[in-house]
Image 1: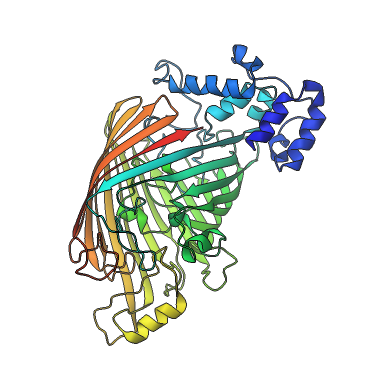
Image 2: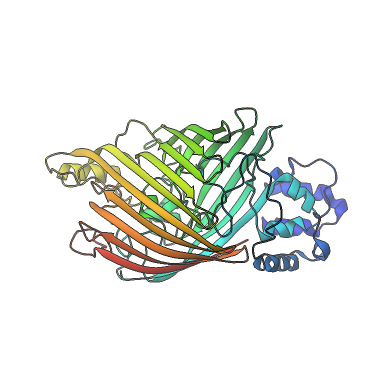
Length: 522
């Protein structure tokens, strides 16, 4: 896509028709839909001499400008909103408004872009690109860790090395966690006078594809399940959106594959406070496919309802799809200093299947002052008729259903009695983030959590876990993020860490890890 942009930038203005044909041939005609049919020419205002530079030179100069950012002008007016000002600053935080899943934040500007789009905006068609609201952006994220665990990760058991910690499940290594590219159009959900539309297509490559997999989405699931590839690719998000301002104070309808709607955290690296993920986030659903409607009733209340085909599964994988109800309510205080967000994230027949968890979650954010805020989340998940791995018949039933699958928690239940073939499996978790903003480019995170895997179905180990982390997020300008952290994990009942066999007595109860990543945004 970037190659196409470079080619169009080299065409003189009287070749507007040639540019349109080139966009059509490459699938980017969407960029022109909302632009008038007049000749497309001219950079946006404020580009100065950069508009005369070649694309590569302009990109280098623009990136340098982003690296020089140090918080901007504090006296400058904030962005237009329908409601209170956004409670946080981004940077240094991964978001400015409290997270809501499956939708844009209605009443706020949600368009995101980086140095690449700023470079394009100063090109010959910059105004047209800006008016279209189509953006291209992404990042490259290498990371690594030093851990007290030293065994190799076992792809057959799904255990060993740093596991159950995530996403850095391989110990004492450096890897490319994520390389991501987005093509999207964000609907304008501040205005209330016309229907608008949007879409997002996301390509993800790296070691983290292990965690975004949806069964039936090929080749991603095949790359891991059949070949145990360290690196793989996954189209982690692909959806369309319709914004209708006349339903309530605005309604967003999203259809396609999207990030699972609850949670403080998300799969995508820049959307998180820290490099590593909490256990709470790691063992609940990652992505879903369906239709979700989000309606802002007023400045305090937003409601959501939808239907999805199951957790982490493609809609065409009819062997395991489970049509499920989703519904959430978000309350935000008048000042926007508090937010409560309870969700029922999937309810169906409740019977054991491919990641068929019934997931009830609630998040709470509170801003103390301009420096301090916190976020807390708790969930409870369960499945009925889960095969009992303490029973020969239950083990055979599980292996018949999932002969090779060791991702998205396909473990059986460790029921209390070997006499039963199945039993209910359940887990609960709670996590708290305490955040301190040092300055416009720096913040500190303190994370504490508990996860109790009551029958071992989520992690493969029947135990209570705790995890404690302190991390620092530093931005170089507004385009490179450095996130070092120190993390301690403990499994109370069994030695779940550094245990590639998955059998109690072969690992460690404790794990200490120093880790860091770098995110290069573009």
